[in-house]
Length: 155
Image (tube, rainbow, N blue to C red; front, side):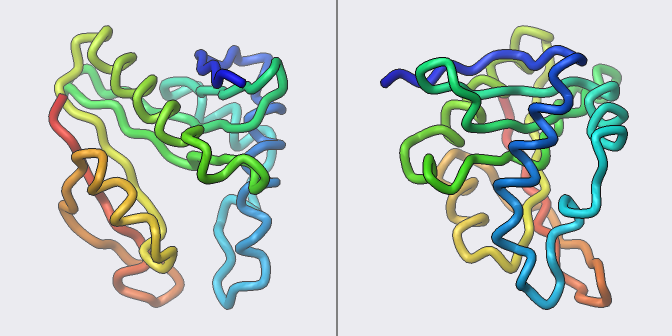
């Protein structure tokens, strides 16, 4: 069962949205749920317009998504809301999407990949660090000074 990753079309913003909502639903019971749960399809469309979206498939079925922003002037691609259905986690879907995003950035002549991840998820930092990302800073939200971890990787 091979994982296939490709660029999402603007018309597929509803698929990116649905996968994000399903993947982030597990945070709904947290004291500070992910802000992804408050987003609309229009929000996803606007975010994708700043760069694009990515979709992962297994056997033709969408199982993961993400979106990215491009800054060619500064030489980076920044991705966010990397989402994998709970039933597909631990099977390499996220790694395949990250590899695709990094290759896409290289193809565009960009020198760096960036990601911002929720610090309170215990697996986030080690997950990205194992893929060559380094922590550059923390930022706050909901009055929590280090809720978000910013990471980057030279390409």
